[in-house]
Image (tube, rainbow, N blue to C red; front, side, top):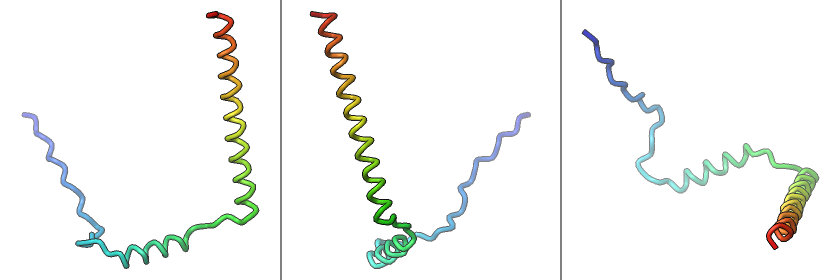
Length: 79
């Protein structure tokens, strides 16, 4: 005779949930979390922003050139 496995029971909740929305607690928790953030220095912010702008520009230029190449090739083949 094969014994059926017992159904899994949910784990007991360890975090007590508040019965409603508490905006004061939300603001306090947000302030606490913002103190944990490691903010970049001005030089780091500028250099990383320039790197992002350069990569977006290079990507856009590459897409533009490949598009023109395929348009030119399609014009040679189909016209």
